[in-house]
Length: 274
Image (cartoon, rainbow, N blue to C red; front, side):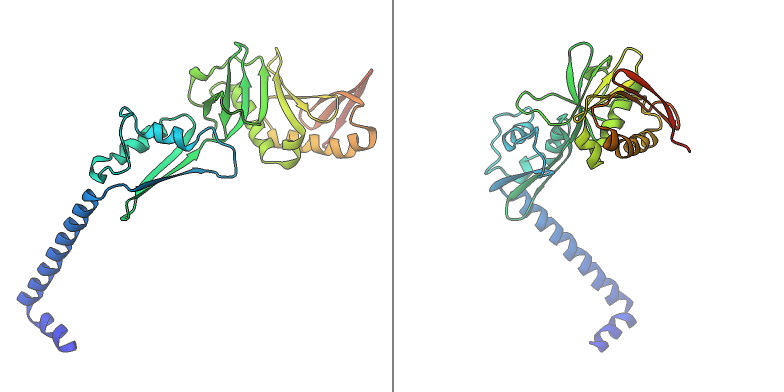
């Protein structure tokens, strides 16, 4: 073996001839594989909707209908791979407002696999025009689906933004609502405690809890983490001792303090900075 290697190293013409043969072999192999792929027929199709743990706005039938695009009568099973426009199919899927990302692949056995990452809603909005839509985890707005209602936080009141205004949350009010809902969805305590957001005529955001008869005046989404930190401390140190139904409103919109109003009386602000 060493003698052969040494021979090709010492003879440049044979060396070049060898590399030419290797390159030709690779080119012919690639053409052969390409021809085989073009002649390949689709034998079966699997559809995977992610994340699997969540209920879906989509099902396999809707996805298969979506990828056919302007060719609703197209038959995929038995079709040659060269006649299937995978890039167009992925683009058709990703134009669906419920789809965040799509990937379609076909293996050498003729199995087509369609993977779809669906958009995950965190908020359902009812605006002041009587329209309803969802906002997903990345702020993208999703139309409602009559076949499926996601169990997420609800926002209503003085919300003017509609689904048609933009693809993502546009106004400061809707962006704040989205940020609050997203924050709560990532925190087990607040996800279990807050069920509704309401925007009053002053554009203050009010939080409506599941437990207790009080309303939380949150203001805007500014200082989000600080407000929730102060509020949680008040819940555990105050409400647990006094009772969850003693208060009418809890106001955290002001920096470093909580202004609480009991049913029938006013409680002076507590300075949380001390």
